[in-house]
Length: 151
Image (cartoon, rainbow, N blue to C red; front, top):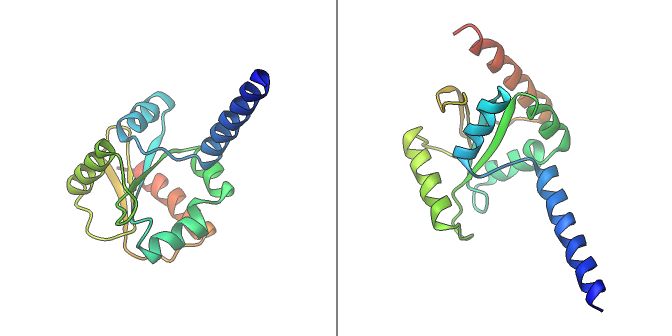
């Protein structure tokens, strides 16, 4: 019985880790900046109201949750979700981080997608209901990266 419990715990832990890896998003901005510096990437910040904002939910359903998006975006970006829920409770530190970032980047509507460099300097902002599909969003990312090279 003891071995069964150990095996069950390992399987649950492995399944949880695999899900987190496939999801491909983090919520820790400072860790994302460190990762971006280490890997030579930019950062995609998703300011979202996950439990109350229909355009945010559509963007997640149609773009951000797709494995094809995550695989493509992770070549050039560290993906960070900054959530501002109304019903779901966030850890106080996470809530404090998210509120601070919304103020810093002057976020006025949801969803807002902000592309920043590894130091946190913004170079592309898409606000409100962007009405993106997977193809158009990936094209916007590619164009934003190309334009950044000429700054």
